[in-house]
Image (cartoon, rainbow, N blue to C red):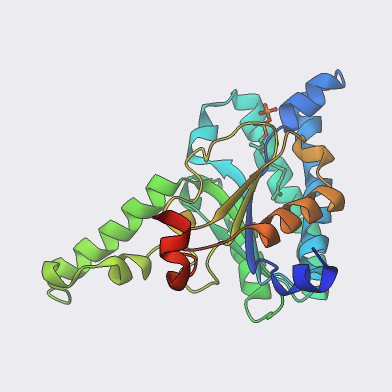
Length: 250
Ligand code: FPP
């Protein structure tokens, strides 16, 4: 496929399940936290790539609702790493006109991390370049539940009648509803599953899986994913070309 055609079919919003930090570290005889530290460098590369390819939004799965079940040492090392990254990177976000946001239930994080998150979100609020969403203490089921809870409150207050609830109603309360739809989900690390990442948002997303471990993720693989996306036919449940229906399927 020609480069010009690829560029015209770039995704606007890419979401990534960054998997494989632990195995990357183990393969090198290192502690898991060193895998997560190496993962931060990949985050940097992916963000720069997203900027250079003019994506509207990049959403990264950094900590799932289930990740609390990891050993306490790993969880607290991850929290310390998140704080350090946020404290160090606000300037980078500002210099690159990036709007930073966290999706997920941040109330379970300690106060310092919550403050860092709010500060980074506030400072970058009016930037209109790439939107960088970090999914932290996030789960797709949690997302749907918090949306349903908000709707239930509106019903209780008499603002909404149950008969009025449809897809559009729910969409308005789902995380990232104001952004471009997630076009492409990439998962590194060799597993072929969604692991309670975005559920509602990826109903029609294209999926790209790679065995590469997250710390080794680079521009070449990101570009492969974009090429694969550009080659896909996206029908959103419709027939490719109604006039060819009989020829193709009957
Ligand atoms: C999954 O690999 C990775 C995580 C749970 C943490 C992701 C964190 C980072 C990439 C670093 C910080 C990110 C930001 C946005 C500041 P795993 O540990 O499950 O790997 P494994 O499957 O090989 O054990």
